[in-house]
Image 1 (cartoon, one colour):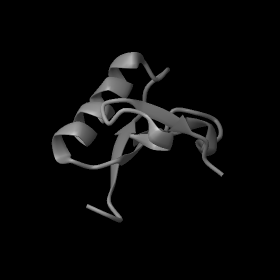
Image 2 (cartoon, one colour):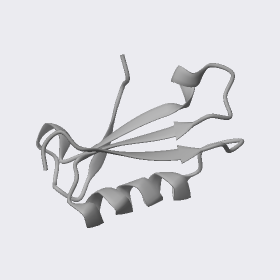
Image 3 (cartoon, one colour):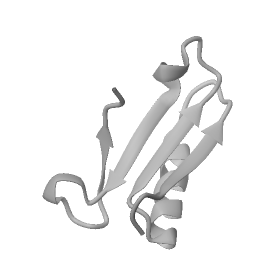
Image 4 (tube, helix red, strand yellow):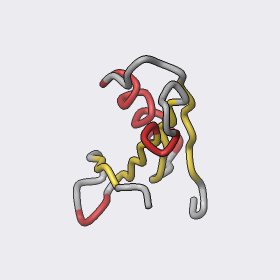
Length: 70
């Protein structure tokens, strides 16, 4: 499923591990590799964006890593 990105939108005081787990669950169940967790409750939007990639840099398929946004 190339060229697909899951976007999870939040407006919370802080992103909690449960929010990360929710995004990872969507990725695994949907068969996607890339997801964005966007929290709009931040002064600067770029500080509220987290990108997650399943299987990044030779990691196991079930693992995820954080990839910095540029």
